[in-house]
Image (cartoon, rainbow, N blue to C red; front, side):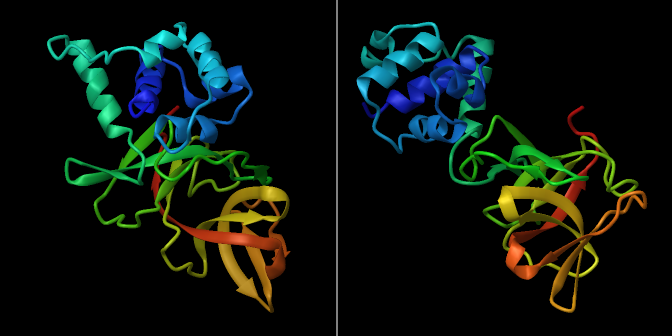
Length: 227
């Protein structure tokens, strides 16, 4: 069973399926599937049969002899390199820079719920960032909406560094009550947290500190990386 998670991940990528597609098909979460793929959870036979069915194979594929990728095939070689890059454990080093996972969309207007976040380092998309982004827990989010224009635009990608210190009048990502997450300019006054849009048509959002679960600084913005 040691190689079971790797086989599932390999076949999923060969089928061109995302973690969420597999998870939705069997009634689980993307985080749950990623934990299985990264060998951090034992898998019962009925669930393995469900996963096999979604991936278009039978349980014998996963429990049978080892099936390796053909190093001589350029497409399969590229797939193997893709698998090696998408590993658990935080950002991956590449060409002197770092790669961090893009976890989800984040509202730049009205806060949205960020459901079922992936474990750190696990995602279907990654973005390369400069080597000075040294936070091992760095992750990225994709902006939706126009409330941060002209500083941030719809579909821009922002890189978040949880270990960095939050500064006044700088962009942040904030998780507030009811599991809502938004991107705004941050300031604090008289015990209140003020989240301000750079687009003047949106009013400030004011919260008591007790309403805020966490505040992380936006370390970098990457314009229209994915459209």
